[in-house]
Length: 94
Image 1 (cartoon, rainbow, N blue to C red):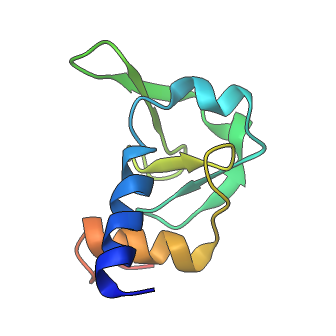
Image 2 (spheres, rainbow, N blue to C red):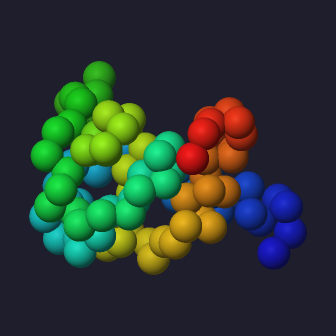
């Protein structure tokens, strides 16, 4: 995959972290690309309401809105790390 293709893929995945509150009901796992946690989707119990009225899931461990669900995409530690590197400062402690 080229750098351009990878960038587009990460941008698409990042979009999945917005307005995703109801995805927790049909997902098995969730992952946070801020803290790197992977956990059962039903651990997600809080959200923020966006300006457009949609609701975005909040990570139960770091309280950041960087959650993706496995109903949208199969993810792993490497993907979460790639997203963290792109959207958060690369020096964020593990």
